[in-house]
Amino acid sequence: MSAKVVAAGKVVGIYYTLKNAEGEVLDTNRRGGKPLAFLHGAGNILPALESALLGKQKDERVLVELEPAQGYGERDEQAVRKVPRSSLPTEPPPEPGMQYSASTPSGGKAVVRVLAIEGDEITLDQNHPLAGARLFFDVVIAGVRDATDEERQHGHPHGVGGHHH
Ligand code: ZN
Image (cartoon, rainbow, N blue to C red; front, side, top):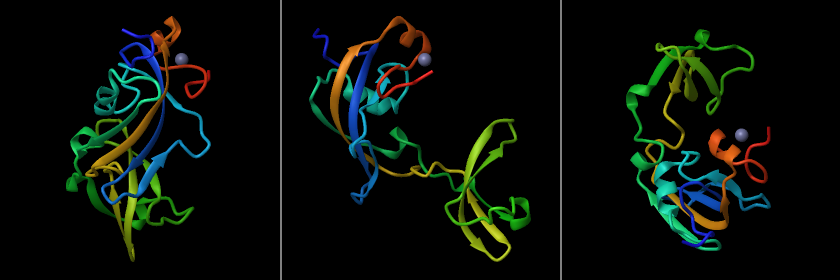
């Protein structure tokens, strides 16, 4: 197998644009950015996207369409709840789209987003902003190289487009 083929244990650099079903750009690193680097097989990116890129080569363009379940999950209406304004910090005043870090009953942390405000009642949504969305990735493989031993141990790439620490 060629050294420039995407496989587990390779550090892969990609340029990507993510759109929703309406064709709106949700995210991209093509606007003058460096390639995003990830360690293939380490779960740095969505597993379904990782699978779709397996076996692709440098400079190859890959269009990947993911169902919500392969992306950020289906929307869970149980994760939407109303709380009194008094349960949120007063400064800055809550606004739709604002995010808060909240403690969960199991002791973890969850991000909740303000969906709506009606008088003293605030609707919070704990779903990922992309939950329920079909995702359309337009990817170009910018580079493929072997991971170093250190990168393999850390489970992520270092250097350009990767971690700096
Ligand atoms: Zn590291």
